[in-house]
Length: 398
Ligand SMILES: Cc1ncc(COP(=O)(O)O)c(C=O)c1O
Image (cartoon, rainbow, N blue to C red; front, side, top):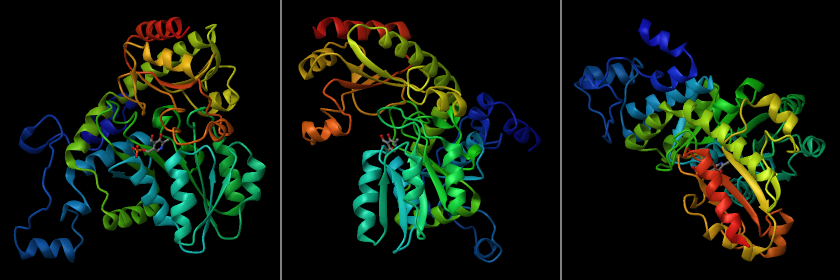
């Protein structure tokens, strides 16, 4: 136990490998065992009584918890400096279950307009069916945000940084506004990860991650997590047990394996993305680059204050038209064309033809999704190879 404790007070790199589990594992396994079972057995009636009457902590049924899942939750709790955590089968499962556990019919919530498309859709249309009203406010307009708070407002939900422009929310100001009205704050911190930004340090009540991205880090699983105080997490866990969107033990193992290299990956991705952003900013075929740690980003000051790294995503707008954008994308040889981000492979996403394909050109432009906008998720390949591939794309775009 002494040794386990020592690990958890070590540096992030050490805790990412060891936190949340004992040294001695099943069958003396070095790595975390995948407990692939749907239920757990009781030796006899005494053991049942110890569990049901004397509150002995143990596992009962797969939907209520699993040892591999528990270790993933403990490790994330440790890395984020939280009190507790629940992991989910996807980021959206984490978001919807968390929101549903906090609202009642007649409540009102506030969300910023830069939030993930599906989160906005859930708040705007599905919650309405249950009599929960939602006000969507423009990101960065703090006066409007405060003015939209009503007697029945339960919480403010935002993201930071946001997709695709990597806007950064002033978390200290958000907390001040929320405290003035005695309401809760929720931040989706997927783009930042607990390493680049820790909203809990700013007093934010609940932090949500799509663990599909940087936390797992290998573009091979779907997962989500919510972190915060024990009392709040207990409420969310309760609903999670009824909703049933649980993550399976093998997925938890892959999440734990990904977490072992998380600090190393983020450090490299921060460095590579900044280098790519600077390359793009100096390129004659590029109109505009969005990266929080570029001096030209509109939230550079606040990003430098509340983040320790700019993250692995760089958004940019090419010069030219839709045809040039397609030629650029089609000429890439190493970078894959795919949505998502946070993994080891570099991915490029063209929002106009992927996530916003069903919007009219005018609707897209109103949201700032132009024909030549790209979101590049910088992977772990050699940064010079990433730049070479981009250069090839520009040279063929014409
Ligand atoms: C910021 C953000 N939050 C939440 C989600 C949803 O996560 P998942 O795809 O794991 O459900 C995404 C997905 O891209 C995202 O970008």
